[in-house]
Image 1 (cartoon, rainbow, N blue to C red):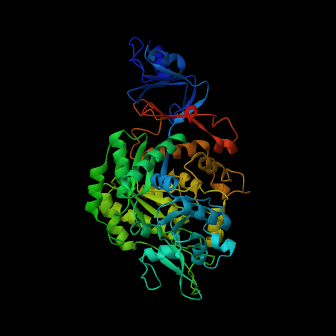
Image 2 (image 1 turned 90 degrees about the vertical axis):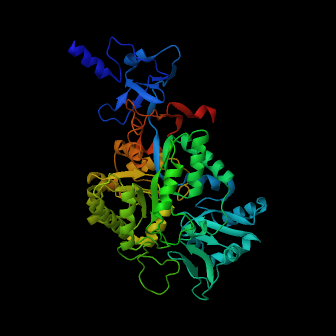
Image 3 (image 1 turned 60 degrees about the horizontal axis):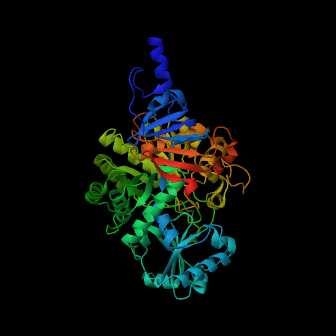
Length: 573
């Protein structure tokens, strides 16, 4: 009898004993190749779902007991299913606002294409402003544009034009925009922002390095209606790519309010965690902890985790040269004409950061620190180490966003401190933006995103698209493929970026599922297909384990389930 019971328990998880009839499932997925992300049982044929939760997993024969008269049955026909993916670093509402209300052109756009887009957008909008992007970091250098401001003035007419670059950090503005923003040659630069000047005349040339967050506090904001429309579109886009959870990496109060409103009104069709940034009313480098607590407590809801904050510690390692590095930049950057080597900039002084991280950690907030350069990463790890010493182990896993360049001495500190490397965006392969970074950083640029080293050291990695920065959409499959191959998933550029840092398919899937669930604060709810967890399941058009690795990027999602509900079906789109 004991042997029979062992066989029963081995073929079905979550079932009652053989002489008990289990409650009928509301949904039954059968005849599949279902990857569970459960190391004890990585593959099953069937999943039973009841009340939005996984009721049982096992083989088809065993789960037949869960089939009732009202059970909806999905025959997978041998197709692969797996846990829904989690984008742990993305700006969904910003991306949707760009889709809905802004002027768009490709990262690879030529000057003629940019001019055509701006002229077209200016004619179509009733607003005095044209916002959009995104220009390539090396756009002006590549096309020999000496004065970005003068060039933009020629194609923008009377409209005020503000365009972000491919990193989402830097701004290109025309004269009318600068006038409306009260920025001229005598305007003091906000801390951490550089108004780039013409080397010969000293006049502003229209580039505002690290100017995007600054402009968010000075330009007219979107309406609540626009934020709501963008939130709904962002969720739909994510579901279409098989994403059932995301972490908004820079959420203003208006953004958090939009997620909350949708969740309360109709329920978000995925899980959202918001890394909330400082309210715009705060002065530079001040942190109103009471205000953060108020936002956390006011907007938390069923599918919305608001116990996260965002701090910008440095910028980007492009020609802007704003990522804080231990060694000087190799290339000439915007506005660095005094001949002194550039190391980038820390946006928060180490002593202040130490105090801020300690306070947030003590208050129960997970901090996402924008740290792209190796110096910024070291300073961030130092601050986390001091918070651990002061507070003990809070159980919070603070995240170092981007984490492109990590000094070898700091690699083991991630594991020791329970810190997480947040790899974003999906640019760990040869690409135009990787070329722009190499032009600025030099040979060190080839040693970006050390995934293999971090995993081998025991550290946790999460990954995110960073959309709409640097990538065209939220599609996770090219990024997942490139983690495994370190090659261009689009086949446009040859070679590999630090091939030695390639990881396995199993490791990459773990990053996008279980690790992502940890980043959402929902590891007990999602990230794997196990009894009692949420039925967040996606069905794919191809089995990732049975195809060439170079075709993972071509994966299409056929169905997305969130809490057992179908939130995307390819046949309906």
